[in-house]
Length: 265
Image (cartoon, rainbow, N blue to C red; front, side):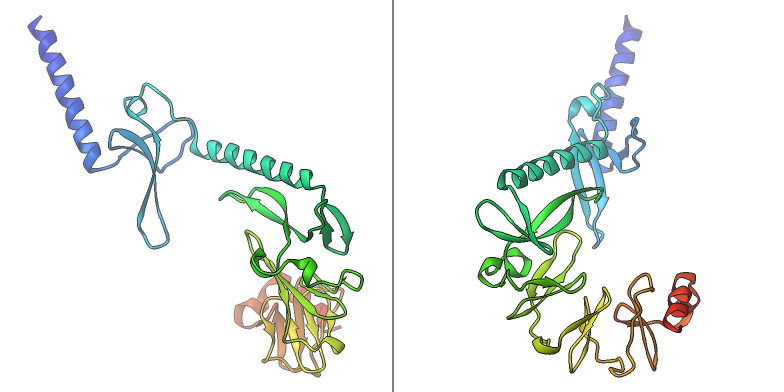
């Protein structure tokens, strides 16, 4: 009997020491998911990460029962995927209720009469689930409504970023979780034309979809080719990828060499 009491006291003492240590220092926790950022900590199970400024970020996934190994916490990543899936379904349902239909080019209109530029955005941190989204306002969907600015009868798509109607040149700036749509005031409306899918020009400047005016290129010799895959161009001073000069080791990349070969033909 004394032996059992002694063993019981020792077990309780060790458990208390373990709990005390867990309050001071996270103890690695493993489950069937095989994730390496799970810890027993503060009488619970936590997912602990570091943000970009090296600060510790904690997310509690389980309580005392999980800490004691009685209750499984499940797989955090799978929970996130299920949450993202449910959010995507909710957004899709909201879009269906608005009955969006194609108006012209990339412009869509819903049953309320709102005009939107359609884009695809990822849901969640993993970026593997995508849903349709509609920019119905200028800027990052926060300014004037599109229907108050755009002349739909003359609206046309020029390339992947630039659009035009009888009044304005527009630029769509794509970003990971939703882009912006704005009037492109730098352009001369009367002479503005697309150069392939990534560039444009007017009587004064060469433009790139993301950077806008390219001051470092030679206007007279700048050219693109429809047979080139990707955003590449050349002028008398060399070659460009998007808005940047291709230099150094990048010139030896096989993909780049193929583009240069096409541009030189």
